[in-house]
Image 1 (cartoon, rainbow, N blue to C red):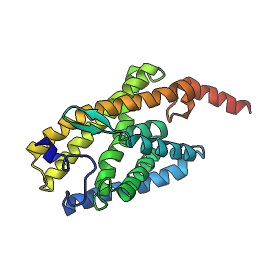
Image 2: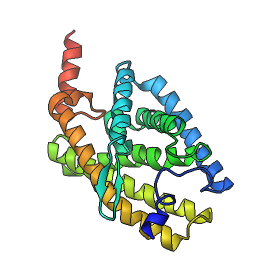
Image 3: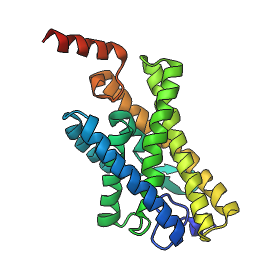
Length: 236
């Protein structure tokens, strides 16, 4: 039964699996946020963010090609929305994951074109916005300037973003009449709860490496690094 449901219950939704209203609504939300992200990045982000966006997009794209096995005979891969949000902030992170999912849909047929708005919303925007602000909240509660706070915030945000995306995708499929909600929801959660653990482990590993080697590249570096950078700028 799970094998028969697998085409329906992945986060990369194919064409024809969502009805017209759901497709249009998710396209509208995604386009509005993308336009806002473009304006925000142009007005507020520094020039050094542009090459970081390219590097981040390349890393997420490459990492998504690597699947990891999960119980039940299926596999998962990195979504990367939370990682992009942590490294670049939610606005630049939104543009990065949008480009990644467009390339995947156009070149690799990973998800449909008519439902690309839904795929960007589910896998990208939830990760960058929900993931980023949840990460900041947990990090602030545990210790904003500590590795423990960063790791806890990253792990919780990455896992939650995958699970929330799975829940929203299940409701989209159910409202569209593709799969009943009593089938879609438990099946999506059954797969994506462990996939979220994989997402959390990969994201924590990537952010931890940057934290230990070039913490100033993070969108929210430890405050001691901010202070040092400010003093260095003033001394010039």
